[in-house]
Length: 345
Image (cartoon, rainbow, N blue to C red; front, side):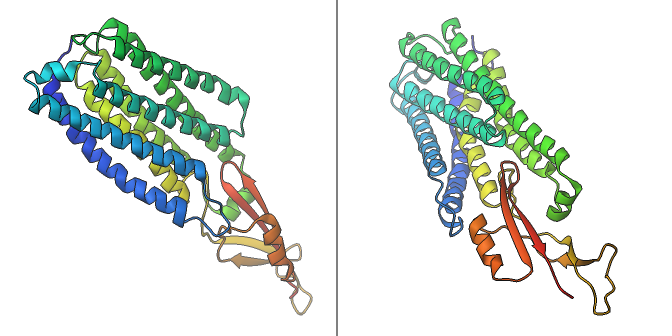
């Protein structure tokens, strides 16, 4: 049995909240396309998978909010019993919105699982258990949609037959997202602890803020899922407010991550301008060294990311006497440059 406010009032609040979130998602979607298409560097290829996923998420969010609006209008304008119409779970419109939510959730979970795979360098011991959980959520989602289609028109969403599928789907999704987010943050923290003092001196930046970004991104989604699961288990129709919001929140979190990566604010990239200190071999005109060990201290005013490959970077520096450069990629902090400068003074 449902508790609290009735479904007709809940539906009005739900569509209002979802429309606000959809507007926010629309703005972020436009910024995401800007980052993916325009802001990428000259030598950086278009990230087609990210473009496809971003467009799919926006289309699913659009379908979901459109169907919800249609359900509300039909219930209040074209029927004599809005509560009965909105409570039915076997209608075509309810199945469409539920399918959109299910696919959106699976895409979101797949994306965070993909980030986990990259950050942990494809470690099977870490990825495979959560991959099994993800595959299980696909099967449970299909079972829930089938249960909706076979339910009687009078059956509420809280009946035991549907509850088993719905709770299982929510729980698997929450477990996948929470575990992936925690493991990504743990990996960043572990890498931060292993970084040498010289590396930190060159980059001049802690990786802890990157871990915080990851935790915040996953925490938004996880918090919504916890609220949704709690409201559903309590038998409240208010769960529809959280349910409809989650569809938009998934796209918002995804877009925020893309924008952060594109602007260099996330753990997948480190684009920075920092003051650093290097030691350069050399002696003064009198033959005396500027510092102990025959080294002179030189302040490098900027360290910035380049879009050159290692070969191109070496070619650029070969023409400059006394400069050697190398480039390496890290799955945690992005691109790392090592520059050695030899000066004859």
